[in-house]
Image (cartoon, rainbow, N blue to C red):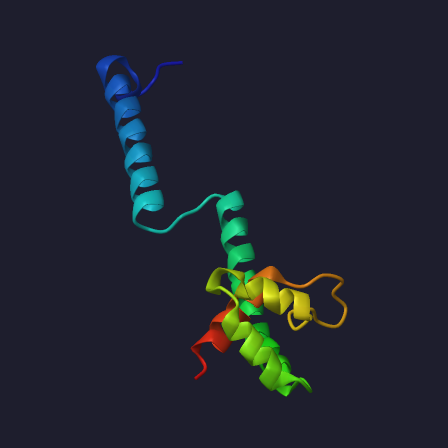
Length: 121
């Protein structure tokens, strides 16, 4: 069986080089500019976005629980007296970032809640 001229000699070399260059260009453009990602990266991004959405939904609830507590004014005075980098721990220890069904306080929610409460006048 005789091969077509494009598959013989130097033409075959050029064909393979062109296919390789085309593949490389497609990969560079796809991953660099078109937003392609690998499965692990996509899963990590999805997990991060889901966590951010949960925190954004629960932080205002945490702040509301803090403000509606029976001793809210005294708690706010104590909260403001704590160093800013410890305020999230104050929220955790007070139980305001622990939600029904959760055994432990949510640290990310506590941080966001402390930021909300710290911004209050």
